[in-house]
Image 1: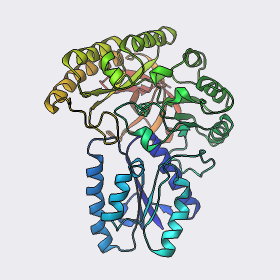
Image 2: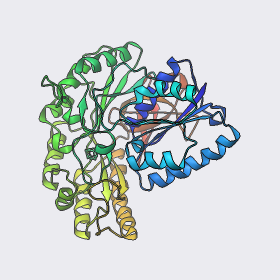
Image 3: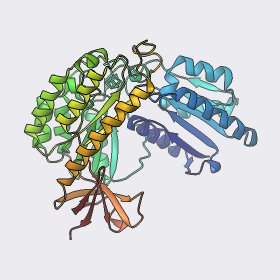
Image 4: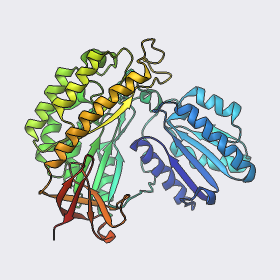
Length: 438
Ligand code: SF4
């Protein structure tokens, strides 16, 4: 069969889709880009965004029409949304044109569910409520040869009051250091230059393992692998970022000087209500410590604007932390209540127009600082891992520095996957322009 996977949401979902695709390819099925050519469509869903459920069910309605014209099309749905009982119940009662439903903990069961469906021609539903041991050695159909996501742990134990992830991805479980090393060694052998280690909170890697292995130890071990040139990671919870990790980043050349450190709010009061377990002062001290030890570090963050009860004074603290930390990049979100989370249904919601107005003020500061930081790169020569032809200009290549800056420059597509030296000639708010240095 030809199949098409559409992935929503974060890198964890992208990595899961690569595994689903790996299993299907191993069975002889063929991935296609054009959905019209597909015999099977797989939707890997995300439940983080506002109105995600409404949009998703609207989308399912669209496939009802398609299946009238193409009754043999197999429609499989999976991902975080399927971990919500209410979603699965609605699919079962109102969307009988769906063929297969599975969750985030049992993607390895998909091939079995597919053959069940093909044999019985009925809807097959299997969603595990929690993850057991992490299933190792699933085939992975990677999007790129030269860079790869490697998931090092699943789940999260933090229960931030706005977040659905602990309910959809279950409790934290770490993979063993041996299995991660084997995977990264195999990748490096096949020409992979850069790995991004994935977990909801990589700083607590190892907590569920019998041996006492921290995230810094794992990174140092991976840095010994020949052929591998860059190690990235995400996401770091500020409450668990250790001195050891800062030292490992400072000392190991292969560990990229980039930390994504979601602050979420600058107000200690709001951080408490978010259950983040650090306050403004603690976060500022941590950033100061990181910048002192790794002066060239690039810091990126996530910020939620308009958490319930956020006052102008609270928001001023967010603006202040933005000025003080001088983030290279901030992913900003307007708070939207997620059903099933502790903050769901709070009465003190911030009005939409106030949220938007605050977001605009935040972005103004963010854009100014981002441009100022990028201007410091002008005239410097940086190493860029070439990711391919630029999306905006087919004459340009684009790639990233170890500090995760996006760089565009003229060059030949054959350089994709190589690390090249580029002299920066112009700074933009979110990217740099340069030229290759011979
Ligand atoms: S650390 Fe908080 S925001 Fe991140 S996944 Fe866990 S609960 Fe969600």
